[in-house]
View 1 (cartoon, rainbow, N blue to C red):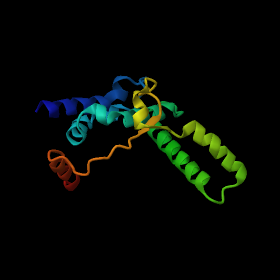
View 2: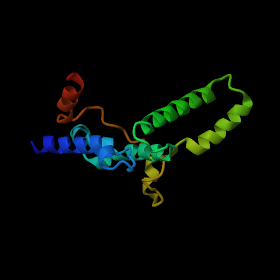
View 3: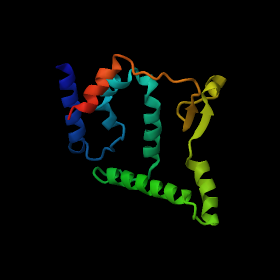
Length: 158
């Protein structure tokens, strides 16, 4: 019952934020708070899955917007669409050579850096950078017994 009350209060707060504080800016991570309970049930401890969200939030915060409620979401969506179209266009085989030179600069600026998982403990890693770690260790192939029913319920319920 306390969880339902907490979700109701948080939902009401977020929905009424504009009325309570008309000059406030909306933060993109407020929406994720509504799903933490589900994420904990599905994915386990936060430290094992939160950093991809941190990278996404960082990208969203870098986007230019006018910080107006109702417009910021469409601005972010349009920026993602434009970036996706640009990436597709730069990957085309018939892309002009001059533009391909721009792709090199684009990749240097926006492509995440990839490090080998074994290099993580070199003392220079920073969880707040856009660095992805490639794990070459063999991955388990079975779903844990406690996670399987949660996933079945989550993906089979309407």
